[in-house]
Length: 287
Image 1 (spheres, rainbow, N blue to C red):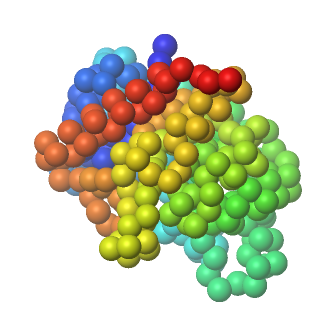
Image 2 (image 1 turned 90 degrees about the vertical axis):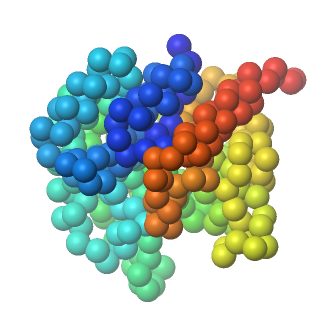
């Protein structure tokens, strides 16, 4: 089975459209993030039980698995000084749902700093990680940290420090190659430093763009600076057995307020992105 999935909310927040585009690619997994409830866009972690069960039923009928919950825990919107109860409550709420959908991974981050001295920032991040890792252990799920925002995204050294200090089998890594150039890091070097702890890979690519606000813009996989083909080949060669999940960020970027409108263009971009990734994945491995 091809273990390919995607953040299908970049096509539409309607679960029916998310199912349709996944089926069109011939894939069997999605990462659950934004969905529609009573005509409004809602984070999947926040939907009521009736909506959750309806979405689960539709996915089950279509033969599509939720391979990860793209949660809000410790993400770009929750600084290290934010109310920790937001995260623990979210985790308490979704662990039973993850058990119902047979989903092992919940995507988390590790808090943007909020002006704290570096030592205090690190200390508070690690305190929170230890609490949540224990909750994850008890719930039989895995916190999968994405190198997107927070202490663990600063570089391989900080990531390994976070893993070592938390010291939990319930804390593993999502490696998102596209987040590296967007944060001024070399994706290949970062990946090499952490790859033995990676259980999930996001396919994303950026290239230098002097017209963009931060000097980079999202592009199709293999057309940017984030070593997509090289990292995918190395993962295959190294015996990686997790999922590859596309997150184009071309038509929609949640943290920039750039949301999909469900238009055909969003679907076309997603399908093209998925097929380009498949072509990269299919390249022969060179010795």
